[in-house]
Image 1 (cartoon, rainbow, N blue to C red):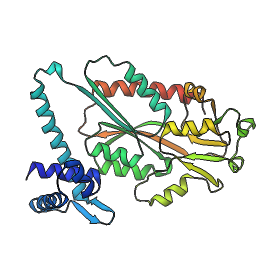
Image 2 (tube, one colour):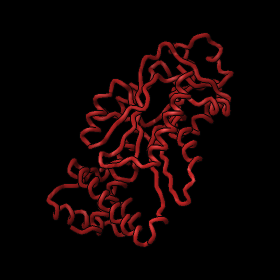
Image 3 (cartoon, rainbow, N blue to C red):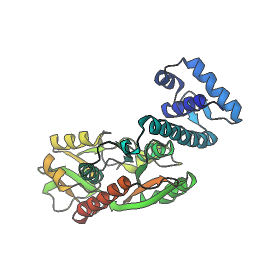
Length: 312
């Protein structure tokens, strides 16, 4: 088996297409395609389903890419170790994929500010649950936090166990409503779902649940009564939109008071909102939690307690 071909297959899996992978690898697309086919022939498996949607991993391909990524990372670590020389010069690394949640961001900021190591790289990626899981399976990220509605708990746990991932509950909660201080909603003693009809919802555009079509998940995650909605993928942009429009609101996990004050916002509970969400920490079974990992988890628990205690 050719190590270079293994690298090619992993890059195609990350890019989702031969054309994008060939641009990243700086090789001709036909040569890349031939290398992947030779690898499949050598292994006796089909790594990719080729379709108009791109190069999609088969179940066997998903397993192969996970192993291949681990092997390539180990090779890279060996090369870096002996090129650097002394162990004292090694650069530490922390990486995590998370939902777009302000209490998690606050925990990461506190964690990062307390690090004193001279050589370190920190990677913090806000994304949906699907990509957070894939980031860990590809060995790019050590930790992940995924968010899903409680009704899908079985779906996610079965999937995580099947993929060999450890999962630990971080928090379960009801979403709160976030809005400007001078929003018409803020004047109400209690806010019900019917009160939201004339307002604009700021929403996430990429929910994910295993085994369910994206359109169905999107429908379940949004109220039909709301006719005006803006889908935004960056958390900072969401808060900027809320700060600029007093008719806008957003469902969110409890937000740190410091951030609410910064943008001139408030958060309120909605008695009609009975849906429970879960934030779950995930990592590979073969991943040993580092001191950096443990330091972040400590800050995460501290931020959760502070933000959630007074929000609901």
